[in-house]
Length: 397
Image (cartoon, rainbow, N blue to C red; front, side, top):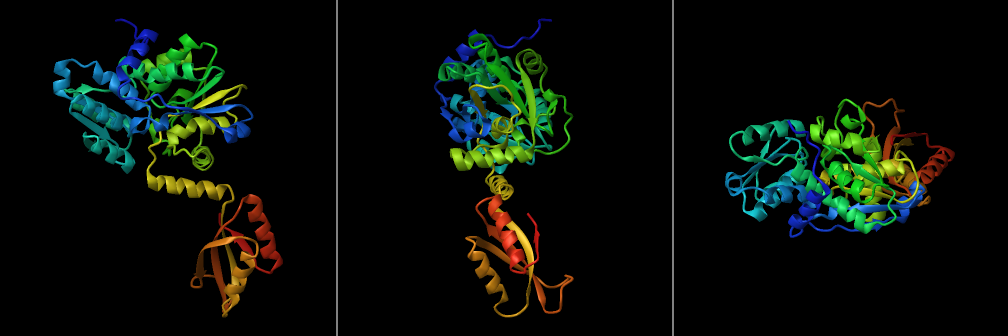
């Protein structure tokens, strides 16, 4: 049996010609904020601005463009955590091919709705990508063509067109940081860049709770659902074993900070998987020096999750302060406290009274305040002032 080695540079260049009518050449932005945080020049490859919101459209269009007439008539099927499903749905619609997408039951609604809106039939099954992939294989056994998210030379060649773009766009590139799930994206890029720019160091990033390429057994949920693949493919594993210089992991806390930083300072909306590359850079896990590029692989974050991540990130940065204190349960006491806080240039977002079930004096009440502050230093200054004013405080977050 022939050894599978993945697509060649010629295959990837041919893919670029096939997908050009659908996929965009996405921009590269330099970021002063991230460069300062990382101590090196940092650029961002904004694939979150790609059609369907992620790089996946490249591989999907390339695969469907190579189908025979008989295969087109039978339709296509895919298993996806969300982004691949959207890409296959759009690529199939553009080619006039029927598509069925199997997605996890807890997939973000933004990704489910988008896939349906692109015209595909969506079937929800299982808890994650791996279960959706099993269901897709079973449907493919009935005659449809399986468009695998990563274990396919043609799909990998499509993703590899990103490597061609990066070689054209960044002359000074020394390190590329790529989110890794099943490995199709990293494989395609590595195959292209190793041929065109062999001096570029390629670093893969995985979520620390699901990092098979880093030798870590899956052990829980992650907000980076797009790279939460428990079992990468044999082909991608063999490619990346030779072509990745380093694999690092990042925590959900670090990913959340990167999402907020990108949103607030770079003005880009990026999902957890896409922000993993930035998280690795700003935490110093990538190593090396010189110009680095973080690939923002996708931007399809559920609005509810984005709100939760933003609030959490701002709280960790000291922008929100939740605290408890006690006041006498008499008219004017709460107003006095709030006036003192306002004098410290703090905005009060919420006030909750706790009386019942508390170990309080008969005439006392506990007040829980949610406050908007400038930063962690401002939080500390306020807590000191409250103690000076005679208010015992307990910081909740």
